[in-house]
Image 1 (spheres, protein in one colour):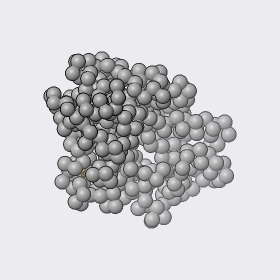
Image 2 (cartoon, rainbow, N blue to C red):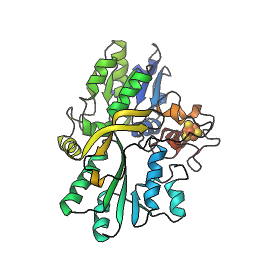
Image 3 (tube, rainbow, N blue to C red):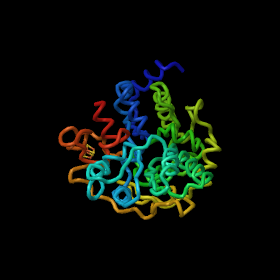
Image 4 (cartoon, rainbow, N blue to C red):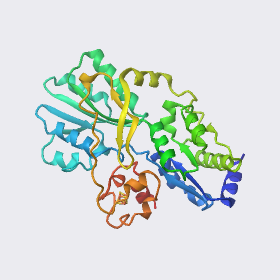
Length: 344
Ligand code: SF4
């Protein structure tokens, strides 16, 4: 089918209102960049999901990272997007300004080099992300063990997407279908969505990131809903295999095991966190459940689960902006509020 026919069909859609969740922040950004909403009927609503790992990281995790950064002979290594996420007393950026030892990393493997060069210091890595980034931490662990590096610890807030989607299916019953995350699906494949499609009777379709990929997936889900189907489909076949990336899954299995994890806005979800099997290298990642009260008026909790769009929050573009974020969804480049701010 030609893309023009797809757009014509979606533009003319006049059936019951449909709510589709795009789980991944990169899809949210692409939907804006390509003006996808202007190409489809207003009766097809696109809702952003919890696909920003930084936005769902709880306060207790930030506090733990800060604790290490302030500890003698310790250095906290993090990616830049964690720097402004608020903890109880402030962010990593605030604490760095007050002398805490926080260094930016561009790859987890830097930690091994730094730890080898400086054995008197313990390098603590803030490991945050979904299945997309988790294998890099597993490979880093492999490298640290092979080289006998002992002065490394991981504080993990690594999360897995299927338990979160299960939570959404249980609690947000008005979502009609899911645009499954492309990058995560490269690792896990399309098969894990089958249990969800079967149990909840909703379509799950894996999408790439170009405009025509996303439009094709929306079209597929709309057609499935019209035919009362609930299938899993992989429309990103040049990157995603049904069974995923076997090597990445094997290395994850070797070094990590699942456990309960706190998602800001959703609460504690069983088996949604990844924790090191080797306790020696774990920096106290379990039980970091305490979360901040969201600032009064901030509706991040509703944004993350797709109950509202960011522009329905009264703070959006008034008191809340990427320069002066009021809530966590405005902090990260992948956060729904930040993406809506930059594009709307
Ligand atoms: Fe929170 Fe700001 Fe988003 Fe409103 S716009 S939900 S205050 S992050």
